[in-house]
Structures are given as structure tokens and as C-alpha cells.
Image 1 (spheres, one colour):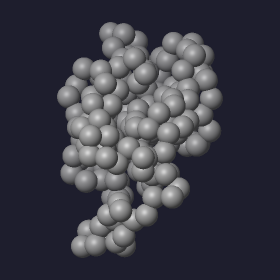
Image 2 (cartoon, helix red, strand yellow):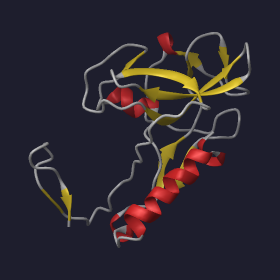
Image 3 (tube, one colour):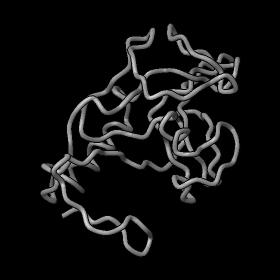
Image 4 (cartoon, rainbow, N blue to C red):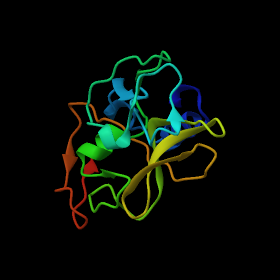
Amino acid sequence: YYTNSEIKTAVENWYKTNITDKGFDGKVASGNYFCEQAKVVYNTDFTAGSATVVTEDNYTPSFDCTTDGNGKGVVSGKVGLITVDEVLFAGGVMASSSNFYLKNGSIYWMMSPAGFRTSNDVANAWYVDDDGYTNGTSVDNILDVRPVLSLSADTLVSGSGTNSDPYIVK
């Protein structure tokens, strides 16, 4: 799970270097914005400990986050990773290539656990690949990390959010 992982440490170090040390910490909201609940596994070759999960072909994404059977769920903080639910709501597709705005040519981790492969008991997490394919893989793999944060309500931005006129935090 994310809360006791090396990737959490890397994300928090990124936040310190790129947000706190540059004076932007006050522009970022802190709270229960992240979810590490085990909800979905790749297929029946995967388990999720005591968590009740479904396989990807039977999964309906949801923004609900509750404590799973392993005692994991809401993660409080200022920075985290995107979840499989957020990727699916943004246009991602399970185990299929998809052309959506989070597809950027890199292969990156999500916060969501994808279960343990029963044949070798290896922990897996969800990721998005460079083709927009959403899948699970061993947490031992080296993938990119794309931190997620929420701006405070009173933070001002300029720009229209396009490639030629990106948002700029004031």
C-alpha cells in the first residue's frame, strides 16, 4: 500500500523540493484527498488479502473511498498519486489502449493497489502506460511518478489550460 511505500517517500521529497522549498506550500490544500483502498484486481489470478475486490472486467469506478478489509483507505496529505478510479473517469480504459488527456507518452504509477499474484505472491499496483493502456504490474518495476495535489480554494491562476497557454499559479 501507498502509506508504507518507497514511492510515498519519493513523492513527499518531490513536494518538498518543488513546492515547499519554492514557497508554494500555502497554495496547496491539505486533507483527505487520496485513496489507497484495494478495489479492483487484474483477474482471478490476483488476490487482495482481506479486501473485497472485483476483477477489472466487472469493475465500475467510484470516487467513494472506504477502509478495505486490510485496514487501508483514505490517505490524508497534500500530495499523492492519481487513483485507478480517477484515470477511468478521465477516459482511461482497463487493459486497453485509450487516447485521453492523461496519456502523455510516459509510463506512470497510480496509488491504487492491483493485488497479489497468487502464483508468486508479488504485490502489484495499477499504472498507465505510454499508449494509455491501464494495467497492473509488480511494484518492483521502475515506472515514472506523477504527483497529484489540490490547490487551495483561494489560489489564483492565469492561462487557459492549453499547451500554448498553460495554467500558471500566481
